[in-house]
Image (cartoon, rainbow, N blue to C red):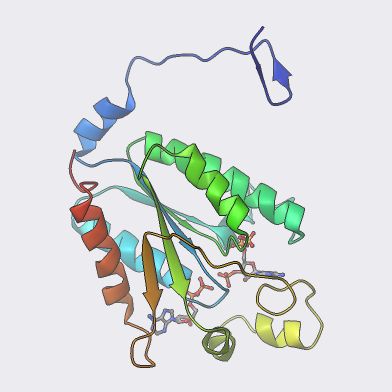
Length: 207
Ligand SMILES: Nc1ncnc2c1ncn2[C@@H]1O[C@H](COP(=O)(O)OS(=O)(=O)O)[C@@H](OP(=O)(O)O)[C@H]1O
Ligand SMILES: Nc1ncnc2c1ncn2[C@@H]1O[C@H](COP(=O)(O)OP(=O)(O)O)[C@@H](O)[C@H]1O
């Protein structure tokens, strides 16, 4: 009897067209670019700039943005550690499907806990999970505060806000780290360029 999670009597169905066939069609390799960092660190900005750059080079990508997914797939989840873990788990599984479809999947979530990110990494075949750490100081993110959420968190009107009264655990072994240079944040095009160069060097931009 085959059993997975809570289901029993389930079997894996093989499909006639596989990942390699799709990659050939698209002339690229499926992977997940997982962008993690504090609210306001520039995750969505990098995701959008990277998505546009890949599109202009004829590469198929798709952005999974934490904020957006919380309007649908994850609308029943809040920000407790358990809900964040479930949020990341679901997005990791969806990202895995997109990578299997042959796409360059760009996931952009705070994903504050190391264990949850590492579980997503473990879902993907070797080296096709590319963790990008937006290593921006809290002071910068808080000064940006585009949604006014840090202000609310400091005023005690949002509880459990990442970086204020909920932890952010920085990656220990990420593939790419984006940080300030001489006190300045690199422009979005440079941040995206760094990721594109990595994808080229590792062979994801062609089949
Ligand atoms: N308590 C608390 N902590 C952190 N963030 C909060 C919180 N409440 C709401 N928000 C808003 O939700 C966005 C983060 O959603 P994520 O799905 O990326 O979060 S997580 O990965 O599950 O931690 C995040 O979006 P970004 O600013 O784009 O990161 C916030 O706008
Ligand atoms: N490289 C950058 N240089 C200057 N401003 C940036 C840069 N990246 C992001 N920003 C600005 O910082 C704010 C937060 O960026 P955003 O991408 O929404 O962060 P996050 O998705 O991590 O919450 C936005 O106002 C955005 O325009």
